[in-house]
Image (cartoon, rainbow, N blue to C red; front, top):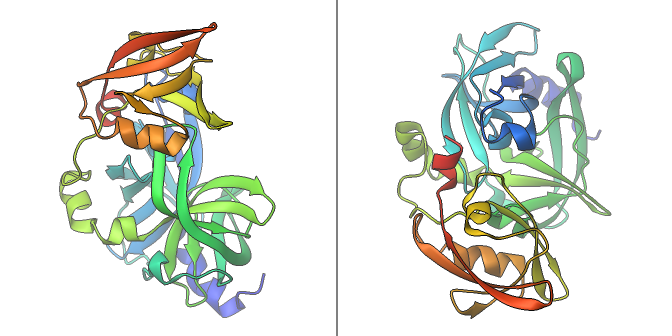
Length: 299
C-alpha cells in the first residue's frame, strides 16, 4: 500500500461498516439475501454516509459500526436507483468526514486507493491506478455514462471509498470486475455532489424523468441480447418474457447490444406498454410488456 501512513490515519476514522436486515418478503431478498454487509464513508460532519444502494435496499434495520467498535443506528435517507448510490444518516457527534473530489478529474494511470470495511469491523486498504473512466452496463437494468475502472482490488465489502492521493472521495466502490487490469468498478461521487440537495430533500432524484423497468437480466452474445432470467413478479415475467429469449427488437427498433436495449426501454415511462420481438424455440414471437417502475417495486 503506497498511501502514506498519515493519509490512512486521516481516512480510516471516516469509514464505517454496515449491517442491514431485510424482511424475507421484500422483493430484493430473493436476489441479495436478508442480511447484508457493506462499507460506507462519512462525507459530511452532520453524519451523512455514502454507500451502494444494493447493501441497504429494503432495510428495516441498519447497524453502523465505527472504527472504535461503537455502533449506531443508521437511516436510509436517499437512494439513487439509476446510479446505485445511497445515503445513510447517522448521529453526527462531531464525527470526522472526508472531502469530496470529482471523478471528472481522474485520468488513465492516475494513482488511487480503496478503503473498505471487512469482517469483524476491520478496515483494509488497497492501491492501484485508474484504468478507465468510461461507460458501463451490467446484466441487470443498469448503465452508467461514466464509471471508474481501476487496477486496485477491492479489499473488503462493497460501498467502500475510492480516494485520490489527497484523501478526497472520488467514487464509491460498487462491483468486483475480476478482469486483468480491471479489478474494481466505482460509481463517480459526482452523482451525489451534483444532486445532493435534491437527494436529501426528496430521498431520490425527482428531476430525472421516470423510466420504464422490465425486471430482467441480460447478456450480449454475438451482436444479440439474450435474456438470462426474469425477476419473479416483475413486469417481464408477467408479460411473458422468458429466460433464453433473444431480443430482436424493442418498439420496432433493432437491438444488437445490452446498452442499446436498456436505453431503448428507458425512452418509455413506467406503465407504458413496450413491444418486444424475440426469438424463442426457433420462431419469432411478439410480446407486449406493461412496464413497471423499479423504485416502486422495491419500495
